[in-house]
Image 1 (tube, rainbow, N blue to C red):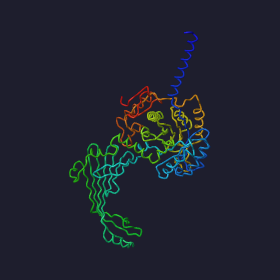
Image 2: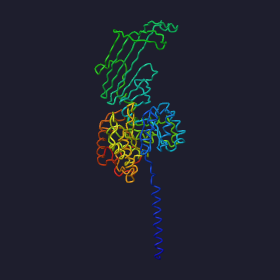
Image 3: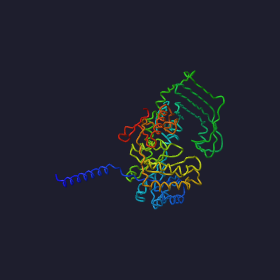
Image 4: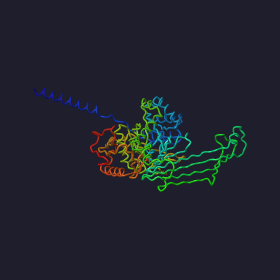
Length: 525
C-alpha cells in the first residue's frame, strides 16, 4: 500500500476512534444538576420577606418561605412568590398537615408552574420526620389486643409506646411499653348510680339550683411487667357519693358534679411475687404482652415509619406534583435512608448542634446515591439561644464543604423563637453567603462534587439508630446495646481513615453497591 494511502487510512481510523470515544463519553456522562443556595424566611411579615429577598438576591438563587403564619395565606404566598421570581430567584414554600394549608398545597399545583414556571421548585413539606421519630414521639395507627381489650391509637412519646383503648369502650385502658423493656397496663373503670329523682327533674326541665346525690364505684388496676418475669399488681377499689349541683347550663348528659369518697369504702390490694397466685383474674405473661408490641422489631418500626411518611405525602396531590415536576422535600437530622424510602424527593441534612459534618454528609449522600435522590444541607442552630447560628467563618466552611461533597442545595435556616425578631441572620452571615457565592460557586477552580465517596460502611438492615452519640436510641423505642456500640466504633474508625470520602448506608436488597465504591466495610467485620 502506498505511503499516502496508509496515511489517509490512519487518519480515518483516528477520526473514527475519536468519534466513538466522544460518543461513548457523551452517552454515559450524567447531566450536570443545578446547584441552589438560599435562605429561609420564618417570620410573619410580607414586607420583611421582601426586604430579605432584596438583601440576598445578588448572591443566592433560592428563597424558601418557611413561615407557619404565612403558609396558609394564599394571597401572601402569591405576593411573596411574585416578588421572589421577579428578582430572578427560585421559590419554594412550606406545607403542613393542617387542613387549610393542605388545601392550598393541593391547589397550588394547578397554577404554580403557570404562574412561576420552573422557578417554583417544590414544597418543604413537614419538618424532621426522622428526628420526631427519634425524639418527640409520633402517632401510630395500630390495632392490637391487650388484656382482651382492642386498642385504637398508639402514641410514642420519649421512647414510650402507649396504647389507649378505643374511646367508645366503657373502660379507660392504657398499656405502656418502656424503652428498658418494662410494660405497664392501667385499667380504670368508674360506674355511677344516679337517683331517679335527678333524671326526672331534668326530663321535666326543672333546672332550679339544687343538689342531687348519687353514688359511684371505681376500680383502678395497675399491672407492672418486668423483663426478668416479675409481675406486680396494684388494685384500688373506691366507693363514694357523687354530688350533682344542678345549674342552668347543665344538660342531662353533662351535669356539674364532684366526687366525695367514702373513707370507709376504700380497698387497696397489692400483689407481688409472694402472693400473686392469690390474684383472682387471669394474668398474661410478659412474653405474651411483648408479642403484642406494635413495633415489635426494627423491621416493623421501619415499615411503620415508611408508611407514615407515605400517608402524610398522600395528603397532597402526589400525582399532580409528579406531573408538574414539583419536588417535595424536608430537612432532618436522622433516619435519612427511610425519609427517602417514604417518598421524599430531597432531604436536607441539618448541620448544627456541634454534630459531625462528615457523618451527616456520609449518611445522607450515601442514601441519596444508592436511591438516586437529590440531597443538600441546611445550616441550622448551633445554640439554643441568641445568636443561634455559628459565626460567619464557620458557616462559610460548612457551605463550602457541602458544595465540594456534591450537595445540590445549601440553605441557611433563618428563624428564631423571638416573636419580635424571628430572623437569625446577621451581617456576618450575609457576608459569608456572598463570599461563598463569589469565591466558591462562581469559581471554576473549585469543582462542585469534587470530593467523592470511595468507601462505604454498611449497617444492618432497618437499623434506625440515631447515631448522635454511643447511647443514642434506636427508632426512638429501644435503648443502645452491644450492636450500637460496635457500630459506633466502626463509624469512628472508618471516618478517621476516609474522612469525607466515606458513605454510610444500610443493607437493602432493593439497592446495589456494585461498582460504586473501592472500599467496602461491614459493621460486624
